Length: 412
Image 1 (tube, rainbow, N blue to C red):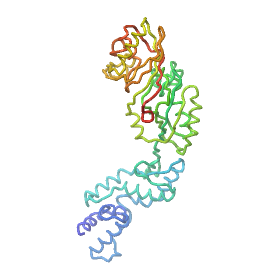
Image 2 (image 1 turned 30 degrees about the vertical axis):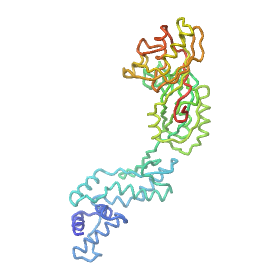
Image 3 (image 1 turned 60 degrees about the vertical axis):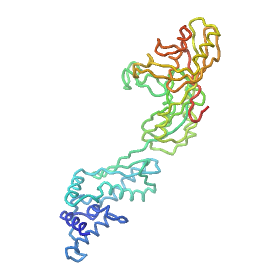
Image 4 (image 1 turned 180 degrees about the vertical axis):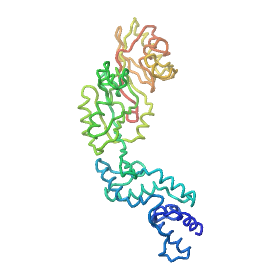
């Protein structure tokens, strides 16, 4: 106890408020406030000096915080007012403090010992948070709040850091002319130029915009981001039960969206291009899971055969490639944006749906990451074995559909 009193006496060489004095001993005892601790320590120092308990060391203006804690109600009111501009269920308070005050606090710790101290920002966050909680009647969440109200204690200004919304769904893409995500113009990088007609985009529509644009309007958000479980080529359709995705809406002012209505709006906006289903609330963790997923895919490929191949020979080659392990060098068409690597993939299932003289329709299930077009064409020998290489005649995919993503919802 004597050590604690000695530390308090050293601290009181400066004129300190009860908050700043008590905060030095925040970890000494629990169940009380720093203000109460400071008052108790001031009395203990007075008694140690032989004075009566009412003869406390004098206090006029706090050397450390400049009596910042007297402004707590003003900060809380400003935070509550700012929070009233958005929809939220949980919140957290953060603060910016004048660096000069933090420098003084570190000086005090060096003079009186800071091993049991609490930083001034921690106390401000907590005490303002208590006042705000009483005003707004919302819950404080220390791990994943809907919004963080950041109070600048120098000016009383409040900024909101609003957590994004995450919405899971599945999409089907019916157009062979739109990409999955927004594609900025290569010439102007999104600024707008003659090549893109001032739009800043290579393609005027995308799956992302079909759903993202109406939802970001409804949520009054700043922007949207699209996280898909892989992607298909622009000229490939995505059919079956669709591809899983999570839409992220940045800085939404409204969080209480009717997802059934959002699904309707997205389908109306994407009519003829893409449709959406199974919308539900999601999380950042699910985004990580979706991005890391490597599901098998089932395709239907229409193939042009540039040479004569009889049915027996075709059956023989298809049988040889069923469950084949293939090696694919990075395709020529994507080599400009991906590392030139050799990847091994498995053709898990391969079957003929129809065969005409110069046209073949294949159904195949492949390991994630398989380049189907190159498996068919051989890509100039960069994929081995390939359909074209095995048949000995040029083959080219003329139409490609993803007809199933074999994720957890579509096993088997």
